[in-house]
Image (cartoon, rainbow, N blue to C red):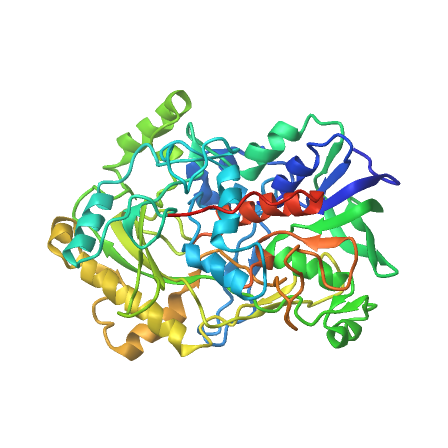
Length: 542
């Protein structure tokens, strides 16, 4: 569609986890005209909709921004991949489809930092509004009528039960619901998959709204800057092909381009640290030094083992008939390996006694992963140790004033030695799990890091050399009242009228779990705030 010269009530930048939610909710009222701007293509690729296709999306040349960090001086000077979705649905179209929310107290932290309305009791109704959980039908913690389809997988690798038994052998509890009263313990992970297909925000929210005449969706449209006139956002300059045009906003511009894209666009628009912007030749519209700061992400490292059995998934001559059957049967059944994300089981644990809540997530991967994170040759398994609450923080910054140039991304991973120590404790617990009796028939040789790596220094070096992001960046447009804050509790950008940010970038602290479900919740809550509706009633939890 040609939007040149057109004006809309609302202009949304980024058709990702929160942006698709907003496009749907804001266009429900036919009196509102809404334009949704997405830099990537439509989400037609089968790799998106077939869950196992996630292994090919992690570095897809068209559907992924394929960002990388600057050399990480505390992580062996490596550039670490930062995949981000570049298509309708954003990262919800390329992620691992795991549905968790973190610990309830994570959201109470947000409220305690000066963000009224964001405690767990107050955000839980928005989680429920977004969710259709087919397994927990009578739980106060879950919704059953929302757009996002959530549930247990149709099959779990047998190693999952072995993993749970190993946890019990070490005195850890089982947990039937990671999104219930607590996420602590060992359990099966639910996923945003239904009838063998991914439930992204594009399929859940955007598809039902596409027919509305008051919703215009632009794909292949690169947002170059927010147009700010006399302290007010009045539109967005976009580039489609070789044409640059301005899409006007009568009421608001809403940035939902994610924890990398939203601060990048603010900086390009002259909103950020004034000295740094002037050094780039950008006219300063608002000095907000917190833009791009407070970047936080989960980082992980794994222990991996071969297996003398074919119980784990693997690529070999022995597995070819089974793999072929899964490929042939999937179109008819919507079940089996292709309908699976392979991220079956996990545990949220406290790596030290006395901690108030889990600081490590363990993830069982029932296959050997190659250097690109895909299923490798042979049979084996791994356990990831994921740092849930990193002390190290970084930033997103401009490397160029050219909107087509990637931003600089420096998470400053592992700058704090405490982060390394926590991941190492998780790896040692993972080793202890594999050494329990339940794993004995399935345990082969340890291939990463190898049993010869045992000392504190050796384990720390392994983490610095082999760790990688768990794909959950947040915090770069922090919500709050402080000096480093970018938006207030209503997600309005400080000092700029008619401009909000609504995505994972507004999270002041990183939650202890996967961030897609929470980003969707942000979109749901933001819609009510923008439309001036009273918030959903806070829950009176037991």
